[in-house]
Image (tube, rainbow, N blue to C red; front, side):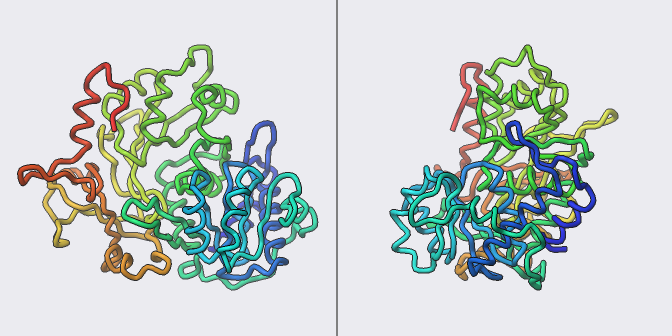
Length: 436
């Protein structure tokens, strides 16, 4: 089932049920399908075809969701661009991806104008907001576009790419990760099956939509579950708990720094009883922050692990039940069903439990490849395994623990030293709130 078929099926099944909450607006499953159809049709009218890349250079806003679900409906490829990138970074991503259109807002248009003359493949600049000379008005195009299904395009879900996302470039220039329709659907299914949300669940989206966690965990997972997404402009420490209470959020995904900040924010007069659990990832969660957050908010914290090359989620700690709590504090959990993980040494050999090595991932969620980067593909994809570049170990119960990035390792006196070990010591001091 490709993403077009998925959206159509869910719209038929859930119709008028609210999928998206945004400020005081509500978008139903049926409306979302029609809006994403309009996106597909307007792009098709502009000449965008199967395999063409469309850069999405936006902050969090409802249009982002319409684009993410609409662009693949005609076999085109969604290209999220980090809204915090500097001009040279935006230029690299748009140029390298060979994007034929870019969709942005007036606030970011100066950067687009600065680089567009150096982008020979770029044919269309589409702006969401007030009309601007030499650009196309997104909502004017949307009003003219049909809400019916776009022209039929043959899509092979395992081979055809739905999204291209660029890594942070910690080892040089960012690399374009190609995610297929199958990668996205399967990883969202894996996450849904593992977290087991019911149709009343409300996923609160506070992370940037140009990152995979927001796309997969907070948009695609509730879509597959028949649940709802509470979209916010981004993380706001001042309003976060008020938003949880107002919309009765069931869960949200965060990074460790956010949990540390939220511990300091007032919440005593708010009803936060709707909150079932919080998923934390992207970096190791300090033990002291974990304990303090659970004690303060009476809410389970579930650590997980994933990376863009693995579409998003690879492992998660088991959710606690009334009868048992199998979580291991400090662990990134167990591989989710449909995904395998193991630890290997520098020669690619499996290592015994509790031995440090590189984390490898295998499954339906592993990317197709890096775009136009055969060297990186050869280094990263071997025999079906994704070499993550992350260092960790697996214990005797199959739980994985992450230590650091392979390239962050410090060698002193012939010994391997990982920054995470130093950070844990610093966090144990009561006067330390943040260590990096």
